[in-house]
Length: 297
Length: 278
Image 1 (cartoon, rainbow over the protein chains, first blue to last red):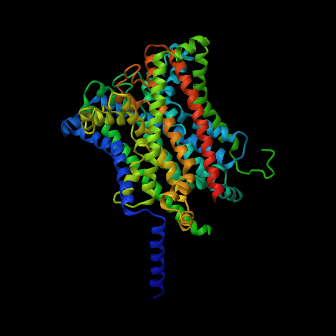
Image 2 (image 1 turned 90 degrees about the vertical axis):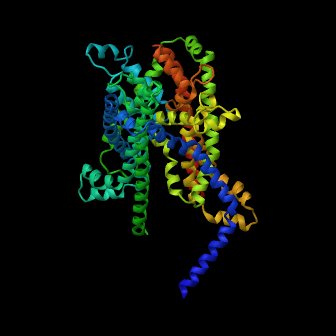
Image 3 (image 1 turned 180 degrees about the horizontal axis):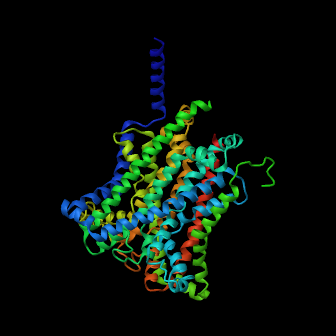
């Protein structure tokens, strides 16, 4: 009996609230439709176009474009660049977040701004600066030639450019998260006799695992998809220094649209997986926050 | 550190900060400084001449004009999308919410060729617009379309959390004091959203200014008409005019740094306002 009464009261309150602080149905639906129309024009229709264009000449042409040797070597190079850039930026992200979140020091806000710098720099400029250092006329140009080393128009340059454009992702994700978590748990671990590495491994990393994973998948998506910066340092040598996005560009400029969109559809598929993982992580971390809450209160 | 009364007992400060500074210097700071050193090879007159030739000036106008236009579109429709996603329910909402981040995840080259295919005169949308005399692909309008795509998630994702945290009580208070829905929105909700909206706008603008991959496919890249500044840098590089490329890059870098400081200031303002209201 009492539940029905409270349910009724709740329902009444809800109705009263929705009348006072919501819009009439026709406004609501027109706003929803305008918003969906906008998203369709700029997101949904182009996304659908990638897959239809890729399959326009049939499934066999599609597969043929993906298993052709140049395409395979582009896929391999993309995976290599991401596989090197990811762990390096991961270690940096954890180190930077540890220093910034757990300690007070002068110039902290300047440091945070400097970590953000690669976000503000055009990818083209990110490529250019490495050409200025490692290119033929660059600072180390002659030394590299004398020692028979190649950075620009070779894999090391591509890896460097990839590291630069994905530099802030993991650090940016971890800094606010670790600041919010404070350092009580780490200090408790210390009092109980844990070493620094044990604290990091058994306390901090489990606490930040969702944020870390979130940063990793964003880094990975950008690393595999980077175009501008890599384009400047790669030299576009087919089968040698072409990543997947550059391969897409070459095929497209040769008017080989079906093949270009076939490789592009792989990248689009990767983007969709990234978004799915991202939503899953957001859901999981929201759940762990909810689960942790009653303990606090 | 000596000033802190309570000494921090956690280990690893020197190691983590040292590594952070070393990595930051090697990957970001020293390479960026190379750009500024390279321009010192030019006299100021040469530098000024390089960055103010009519073709370069035209590219600034296009880059900043189209970025501004795209950021305004994103501010208006991003606010609307954030509102619809936080306030209303409709079928497929979760999917739409997840897809808003697509421009962050989709490689720019893929976005470029997809938008070109859709907006070319024989494309799905381009063929609908052409009879009305509107050409999108291979015109400056195409640049705006690509930059709108690139900046789309920024406004939505900065405004959305603020809208979610907005307390229902303030709106109820406004309503009980006799405000109609539009008055409540424009006088109560919108002022609370301003810092987030501006931050999202600035982020979208900053991202658009440097964008290269998605634009070059749809722009047509005609000098003086649809050539963006990053493309000028690439063209100069391909002609081995390293000093010229760097001069234009330095102009863009300085503007980007100013934008970054403005964004940081905005975020500081917005977080201060949010914590003050709590």
